[in-house]
Image (cartoon, rainbow, N blue to C red; front, side):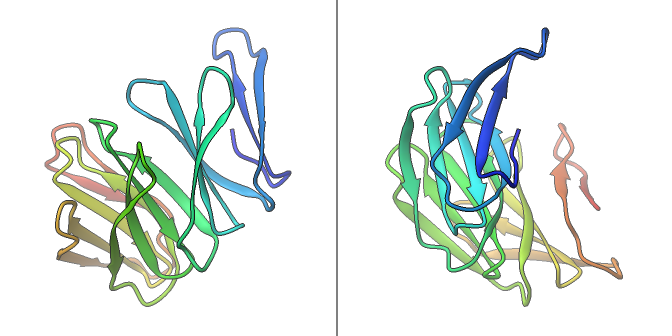
Length: 170
């Protein structure tokens, strides 16, 4: 769980027991995501950073810097090799999840980006923005492939269906 108290908490999902409290962000935390293998946990914060943690020990592994606004959302690719982050700075960044190297910066939204999601095959990345659009990008190239319009307010969340044929936005 992420909190405005600048921490991330890891819980036992069956018992509700608190297992870890991760401290290191200097502002509130907006989003968390486990890597597909469950070994790492990423957190996105208003402090303009993404942190990657060892999910078992709570030890901070790397801090990803490069956004110039609060980071609102994080998502791992299904293979766990890439991590995407969405920011109030109007960009989406794709990172090497192991090294923290910035691979791509996706520009095209005109307002802050609230949510990001990889398709299960890792070929596409979707982003939801306060500019009332959803954009779909080539995850390897950063090329914008679709802009979806129809919302009349901020778009705050996006998700691909498991069969990758549908995309939902809220």
